[in-house]
Image 1: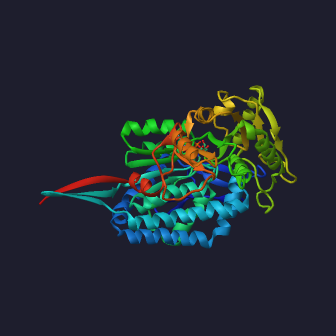
Image 2 (image 1 turned 30 degrees about the horizontal axis):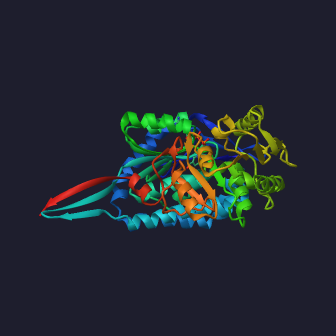
Image 3 (image 1 turned 30 degrees about the vertical axis):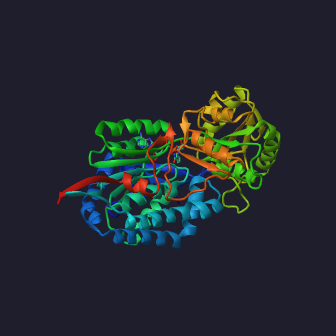
Length: 479
Ligand code: NAD
C-alpha cells in the first residue's frame, strides 16, 4: 500500500481528479512509496478562490492572532518532529540525522520567526511642518509560493510563513519530486483548525500547476525558489501582468582559501559545504579556490576526508551522505562527471555511482573531487547540484576574485583568511548576495537572503520578506 497524498484546498483534503496521480520514489531504493495528485488549472482556480474568500478575515486579524496561528502550527510540527524527519529523509534521500537536526527544526523556526515578525512589523511615519506622512504596509491578497525538492519543508515554510504573517492567503506548490512533508503540513493545519482557505497546497508538476498558478490573474505575487531556467520563464510571465516576483535561483558558489586561513575548522567546513545533502543545497561551495602555497595541503586533506565519508542508507545513523534525489537528477550529475573528464578534469576521488548493500536501486554517487580544470569550462561555470567539488589554485588576491566571479551565478561565497582587511576587501568585491568569512551556511533569519546575476532577484529573510509580501501605501495628512 503506498501513501496517497491530497491537495489542501479551502481546508479540505482533495484527492487527484480523474486518477491523475504521480509516482513518488524513495531515492535510496528507487521504489515508489507514495502517489501525489498531479493537479491542474481547475485545482489552482479553486485554491485561489478559497484563498481569496479567506483573505478579508485573515488580513483583518490583529497581528498577534495571526502570529498565534503560526506558532500553533509550529507547536504541532515540533510535536511530530520525528515523523516529519523520517518522511523528509525518505522522500528526499537525505540522512535522517540531517532532517532531524536541520530541515524540520528549521521549518518550525521559520514559522516562529515570522510569527514574531508579524507582531513587530511597524509602519513608518514622517512628521513635517504642516503635514504628517505615514506608510501603511498592507498585505497583497493571494500569493503563490513555489518551492524545490532539495530542502522541501524548510524552503516551503520559508515562504509561506512571511506571506501568512504579513496577512496574505497562500497557494503553495511544493516540488512534485518531494511532496510528502508539504502534504503532512496541510494535514496538520487541518488538525489544528487553521482557518480554511488561508493556506492552500496544490500538488503537481510545474507545467500543470505552477504555470496556471503564476498566470492566475488573482494571484498578486509569486515567491519562487528553484532553477534559473524556470525562474527566467516565471519572471517573464510575471512581467506580462506586472506581478511582484521574488526569484531564488541556482548557484555555483566559490570558496576562497588563502594560505593564512585559520585551520581549526577549515577542512571540516569545506567537506560539509561541498557534500552536505549530497551537494544539493543552493549554498554549497562547489568550486574551491586555494592559494597555491596551501594547495597540496588542502587538497590532500580534503580528498582523504571525502573518501572517508560514509555513503549509504539515509535511515542509518552512521550515514553521512545519502543518494541524490531522483533518477533524472542522477543522470544529470553522472553526465556532468563524464563531461568533466572530457574537459580534461582529473578525478581525485569518487566520479562514479555507488551501490550500497541493500540499496542497489538507489541513486548514490560517490563524493567527487576534481582538479585540473580552468575557470571557463562548463564544469566550472554551470550548476551541477550534486556531490561534486572542483579545485583551482590561485597566486594573488586579484586572481582569486577573478576566478570566483567567473560564472553567471552570484548566490554565495565563503572566504578563509586571518587577514581582516583582506576579508573586508574580498567580501566587498565578490559578486554574491551572501559572503561568509571563516564559516559557511551560518544563517540568521533576520539577514537578507538572495543572489545576484543569474542567482536571482530580490531578497528573502527578515524585513525583506515582510516587505515583499506587502504593498507600501503612503498617507499624508495636512495639519
Ligand atoms: P525547478 O526549477 O525544476 O523546480 C522548482 C519548482 O518550480 C518545483 O515546484 C517545480 O514543480 C516548479 N516548476 C517547474 N516548472 C515550472 C513552471 N514552468 N512554472 C511554475 N513552476 C514550475 O528546480 P528544482 O530542480 O526543484 O530545484 C533545484 C534548483 O533549485 C537548483 O537550481 C538550486 O540551485 C535551486 N535552489 C535555489 C535556492 C536559493 O535559495 N537560491 C535554494 C534551493 C534550491
